[in-house]
Image (cartoon, rainbow, N blue to C red; front, side):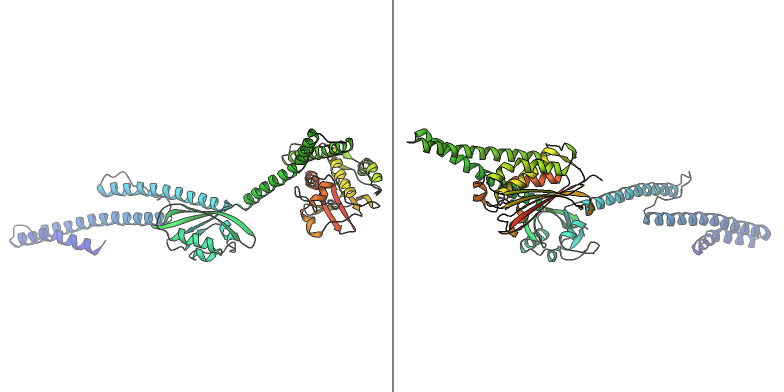
Length: 461
Ligand code: ADP
């Protein structure tokens, strides 16, 4: 019971006690009766006050528990009885509001977790900056993009400091300080340390009651590379098609006008025939490559004896080698494991390699095909397999050109390749077919000494 309540009871009993004392003093009531009335009043007063104070204390405890639950975002655990007095009604109302608040807290927490999961899994770098350009939030992709350690805390740092590219810095500074609400977009090339193309958008948001910005960095490097590869391919293709076509048109036109002697006519017809065949080869290679790239030609896998396959191809080019006065040799190791491969595709691969070896080896040279059982690397493991080596004693390839030989239309000497009937697509096709077989391709070469092209195919375990 509080001292204030005791004072209140004392004060409320004061008038009746004074009256009783006065009445008793005049002799109207016996002192015993008035004493009993006063004692009874005090007792009743204290009983009422005690009960009231207990009720208040219990309510205060409930409010305390409610405050603790709300602070911990938990639903209040107590219930209010069915009393209909104003205090109980108000308490019930407070409890209902608290329950609704807790449901809202849970929903917000779920949303926050979802938001964080989305941010974490996003490949785009996301940075939220506050009103002064300071970092408020940054996802993992952004940390990686701006060279920060994965778990590092960058909150509060000036974001402009992290953008090392001056144009990007200027964009970020403009986006984070502008008070206008429009979305700003830009495209930048940054060195981190490799060249990366970024598409950046900065949208306005509210953070802590102030204007903030969400910056999203979309890495479009691969897209740019595809675009470049596509435009290069179209430019190369147009060039490759135009050369034989203009020769065809030119000689056909001359023949149509009429030439004096039969010899010139036959020569022109020969050129037209060679150019038409070159065009046909180019179209065939293009279709082959496009089918491989689009996955339109599934492999017809069968068990193949490597030595038989090699002998078949060496046989096919035998006549050409004799004609070019190049010695052709086949060496196969004993007890080779059989391979699971598409016969026609592997024939295409080996023919291509032997064709190149014969094309780039001068008269009197030697082309050797070797078949060996060798383990090779697949997925970082040493797996059993078979390797085919096509070794020539030809002109060789400059070291700088070797890594680019499997690019479409890449040739060391464009004019010479054309003259020899090459399309520049052979090794690109070889690489694709080998990839489909989980095989590998390696090219070693020494200028004026020769080239060794090794392909490796896994043997079934
Ligand atoms: P191409 O139809 O021009 O032969 P490829 O894709 O088969 O096209 O080869 C690409 C280039 O690689 C050739 O133009 C040539 O410059 C070079 N090359 C390939 N094989 C050899 C080789 N055995 N010796 C020398 N150069 C080679």
